[in-house]
Amino acid sequence: MVKERARILVVGGGYVGMYTALRLQRKLKAELRRGEAEITVVTPDPYMTYQPFLPEAAAGSISPRHVVVPLRRVLDRCRIVVGEAVSIDHAVRTAAVTTLATADEGRAAELFDYDELVLAPGSVSRTLPIPGLAEHGIGFKTVEEAIALRNHVIEQMDIASSTRDPAVRDAALTFVFVGGGYAGVEALGELEDMARYAARYYHNVRAEDMKWILVEATDRILPEVGAELGRYTVTQLRRRNIQVLLGTRLESCADRIAVLSDGRRFPTRTVVWTAGVKPHPLLAATDLPLTDGGRLRCTARLTVEGTEHAWGAGDAAAVPDVTAAEPGALTAPNAQHALRQARVLGDNLVHALRGEPLETYAHAYAGSVASLGFHKGVAQVYGRRLKGYPAWFMHRVYHLSRVPTANRKARVLAEWILSGLFKREIVSLGSLEHPRAEFELAAGGMHPHDPSDDPKGSS
Image (cartoon, rainbow, N blue to C red; front, side, top):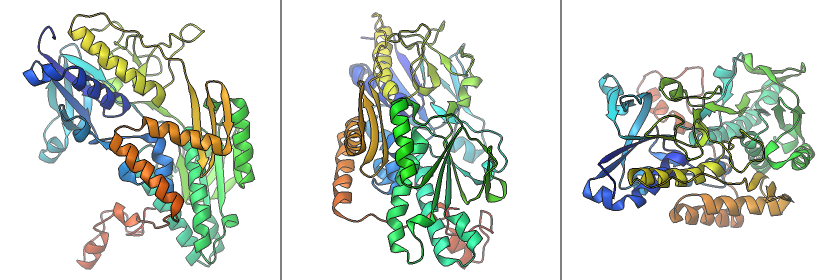
């Protein structure tokens, strides 16, 4: 039994936020029923996105609905507030939150009082002041971006198929991906595979007509799987006529021309930016201690260093890695650690409420798996290296075991089975991004977006 009534505020509905709240509602079931505890989850989206499945969602192997987990269904004993925490004053234990209602009514941010704070807002895309990037770049961190990118790639093939202008055709069929980490390599591999398959249904577009370019500022890609598998991945991508440009940076993409640091220029209508992430800007709007890199300074017990009643984990937190040989090492900001940290964080918060000793988070890194397209992949698991089909199979098995809820597991598995039995879908639904465009045209109105854009397109 908890010592006193506890109001727990969880900021963030990602891996850490959802799994921590799930752990808390299980451990505090009796206290929640008696009204001795309450859990509030503040999240910008009413769902958790399982990001490792974004490349497959973009390629059409998985339905977008099955990549996300509805928080209201999973966290049925928690209060879900769809909104953004804009600042936190932990000295008085209040968080300022903007919601859909406050924005609609023109009110200031609403103040939420709490007794215990779990800060897990995650990370955001790390961008650079590159000319044209804000206007023409496409991110790959949300399910909306993944589906928009799929629609965009298919639309570019439609444009190339219907034009006689060789310059327009060349720009439409040139796809530039910036960043050689998991997101960039997996998105490139899956989408190239999808576009290669779709090309067979175009009478005047061949797979050989498309240019796929991966730009990486360092001298290797996929550092998580090791140098050997990184070199293997480069070799496999180049065998698929994908240009892998190492030690190269994107200097500009203004006027739809990708200019690289080595002087090469590629007219293109597609620049996908996956060059890393940075801590959520909310962290800078708190009075909690941060590292030089802007992450929350945490202990191995997942408490905020030097602060009571505050907890952190995941991408936003700098958590000491007690299993590492070198002193001062931190756990990597990835899903593998986030899932396990959330369980320990939830348990420790309950221990703290009940006056029990806290546990130390300790998990040795198990390895990494990456998909490079259908039946292609690389994996390094407990020191063993896998390539090709075995690695791809390992990738699917691992992530199927990790995706939350039995409902999602069954749906994803069913879609994989069906995709193996039937042909891929190659339809673009770009009109979803401007669903009222056609009605506004019929009614004689104006588009809410740039009228030079295709009203039914995603580009």
